[in-house]
Image (cartoon, rainbow, N blue to C red; front, side, top):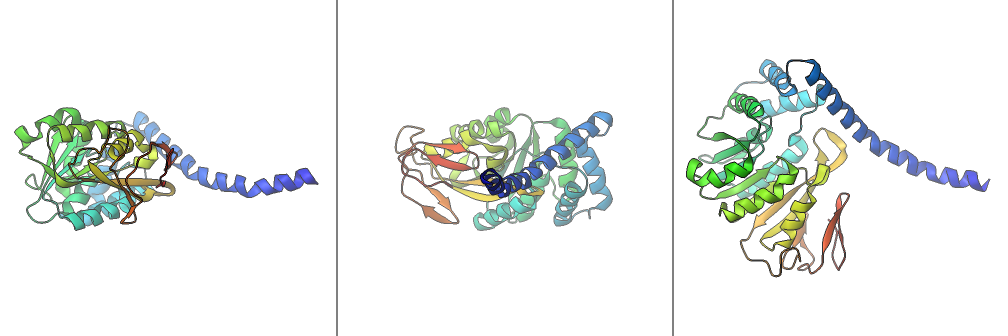
Length: 302
C-alpha cells in the first residue's frame, strides 16, 4: 500500500513532464520532416515558403506578408524567425526608441527585416546582413514583396565578422541606434565585441538578441552582464509558433561607460525585469542554468 501511494504521488510530476516534453517532441518532428523533405525535393524549405507567400500575400502590405509567413509556419513547415509573440516585443521597443540607423544580423527568410522596417520612422534606414547567399536571395524577394526598396532596407551578403568592420567605409553606417541579432547564437558575443571595437554603437543604442533562452546564448548574456557597458533586461516569451516552449529576447542598452571591475565580475551592471530595475549593482558571479540565471553570491534570477 505504501509503495502504491508513493507511486501515485509521482503521477502528477510524470504527467507534467510528459505534457511539457511533447512540445519539444513536436518541434523536433517538424524540423526533421522539413529536413527530410529538403533532401527528397529539389526545392528547399525557404523556397517552398516563398511560393506560398507569392500565392497568398498582398504585395506592398508588410503586415499581410508577416501574417502569411506566420500562417505558413503554423500550417506547413517550421521557419526559425522572430515570430508574432517576440515580434510584439521588438515592435514595442522600436516604438519607444524610434531609431534611424538600424542593423540586423541574420536576415534568414526576411521576416525580421520586414518586421523592423514597417515599424521605423520615415527616413530611417535598415542594413540587414545574411551569411548564406541562397537565403539572402529569398529574403530579398520577401523584403521587396513587402514594399521596401533599397533606400529603406539594404541587404548585405557575407559573414557578419567580415561585414561589421566594413560597415562604416562601404555602407556609410557611422553608428547604429538599434541592432537586432538573430543569427548564430555563438556569434552574438563576438559580434557585439566587434561592434564595440569599431565604434558602431551609438550612445544609448539598443541591442535586441533573439533566442537567448532557447536554444540559448549564455556566453553572450554573461558578457553583457559583466562588461559594465550595458543595462540589460530580459523579455520572456515563447518560441515562435510553439507556445509551450519558453524563450526570450535580451534587451541591452549601451551606456559606453567602462566596467566597474574586471570583465566577468559583473560589477556595475543592473538587470531589469518588467521595466523596473531589480537589485543593486552585482558583485557576484552568475551562470546560466536552464532558462534562468543562478547566482553564487547575492542576486536575483531572471
